[in-house]
Length: 535
Ligand code: HEM
Image (cartoon, rainbow, N blue to C red; front, side):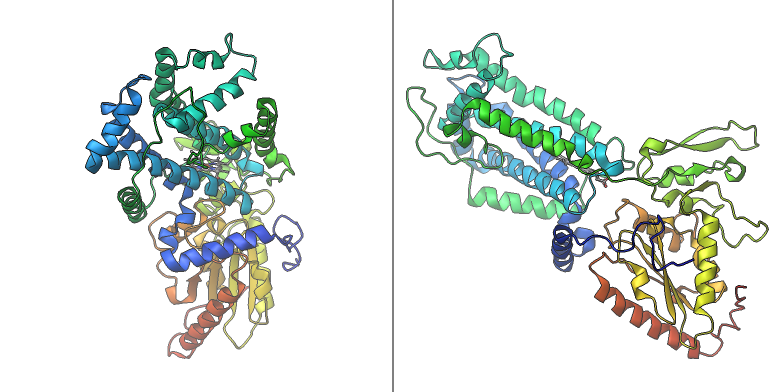
């Protein structure tokens, strides 16, 4: 078996050079140094967007108490909130404005990240596709928000929006008629208020639920420190640069200089140059293109995990570990004495193999069978194949005098086969979470002096939880646990993205050095550890 030429799925080993991905990974590495991986905001863009939307909601509720929903009263009420109550109402208004901008910035970065790291195609098509209309819903919420202030900017937005709506022949009356009498009717204004205060937020909540419903254990809150830090930054900005209105709307005037919010109102300046039809064409085209991106081109997901009821006792560990809700726990159907069994929904399966790593039956130390079987397995790289490859690599490591190191790496991190040498060999799995802890024990018992496991970078896993579950299993916090008989000094875990080769090599050298120290310690030789060799 030639482990160096092909990855486990049989694709060419080298991934195409992707400058966007490499640039983005470099940026994240830089943020890791400044913020630590646990607090790196670039790993929490979706949850930060949620957090800012919470700030928008709470500050919005406060503003609503004092807001007058009428064309004649709106502007004055906002002015009172801003100036008479600057210490609370004014701050709330600024928080509302700046948190909206921050939410949009997070959403755009979140979207860019999924694209840059190629996490939008294949099994992720659903999250991407549902994200695009969600983005538009946030934009619409911002537009109706600006409208409610009823200042010159609101007037500009209102007239631009009416031109856009009138270009779509779905309304019985032209929207611009609302402005003909020289003022906006209260009925229409109340409709905007209803949309902004109730209709759009409710639709947004539903869309967000829809957006994440195919993921399991979705976190919607960022780490507390990050949330507190972001809030302090927003508060500081609100105090330093309070949000203020333009002059009151005056339909007899054409607004001259306006401070546009480019996060939300970027389409409107186009209307100065283009017809409404052309503007629609551009925005619809961009939206459709974004929605179709997962298919341009489509990324094939490997075959789904397969359950073998003969080896499944329905413990539910794979059900708990699956990051994509692809596994369900159901009543036993085969008459076996266990109460439950698991079932895979193939359309939801990301083929990450985490379920195989979490199955207690995925135990290469079981010697009874000729072909090792487990409760849930990956057809393209089953557990018996992994054991056979491990055996083959251990045999190739032979009797090297220097510490013999076996590396298990993830397909989405650094390509570990590039670290191959006389005393070091690497094997690629789909995800670090695919590794059953007993395989580490197996490798150490059968000739490896040390095992290095490397997945994606810490706090960032291509399959969401592979790193986290692996760390839990090794620490004895999550089943199946690494047994305590394994010498922890012979195991190293270090996450590395595909651009982190130099750092991984340094970690490997340090690990090798520490193993050398162990080998010279009395009583730490392989023979003393009762090592039985393969073959
Ligand atoms: C209000 C807007 C949005 C919010 C609050 C939001 C939030 C989230 C959250 C919390 C997750 C789950 C992350 C995890 O637990 O691993 C997620 C996943 C995802 N989002 Fe968004 N999102 C938004 C908009 C978008 C947009 C506009 C796109 C792209 C068009 C997008 C693309 C994705 C993708 C591809 C995933 C899947 C990530 C994965 O499977 O690991 N999202 N989003």
